[in-house]
Image (cartoon, rainbow, N blue to C red; front, side, top):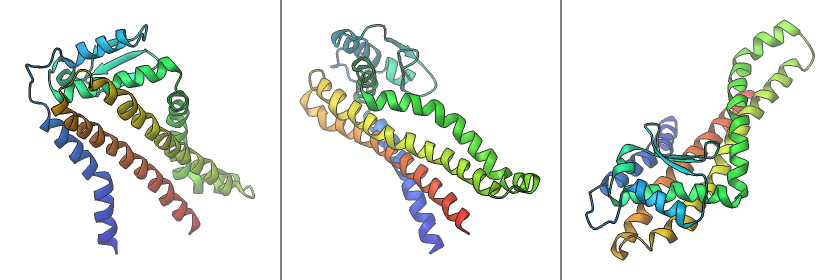
Length: 224
């Protein structure tokens, strides 16, 4: 049973990320027939969609859209790359910029939750480790229960962030990036673009499952 659980955990946590890396690498071959790099396509799409005040920058911290700085950030391979992976990832991140421009509710909710979750998760971990000590220190009736509830809420907030992330990422990929790519990518490459977006989406699904399972693990521990 234990071995089965370990295999299941590895399948959920590791395989989606390995698959995504394999898919992204598979489509990194340079394409001279593409009109521009990932950064150039991102800048073009931002202008075309009328998204004002958004910059495109190179980063070493992973591809992402920063709603506070209003900036699409791409890794060097995707910023300078002229490949299917580069333009697909760029279109996806521009999809987030479009969401922000249009006031897409799940994106705005995630942005607010992330700030709360970062603080709540740290607090939860501290409280969970310190719960027995704090209970002995205070000796208040229900003191341990109160601390435990606070800790579980903190882990629950993190799980909620991951769950809210799913519709945000799927919308940016399949409702925004994919339709735009159809106008710039040869029809023969569209299956590959969808493959890239799907692989990346599964990494978010895996992260959500991991977060929920972590919350469930603590709930099981607390029931003992």
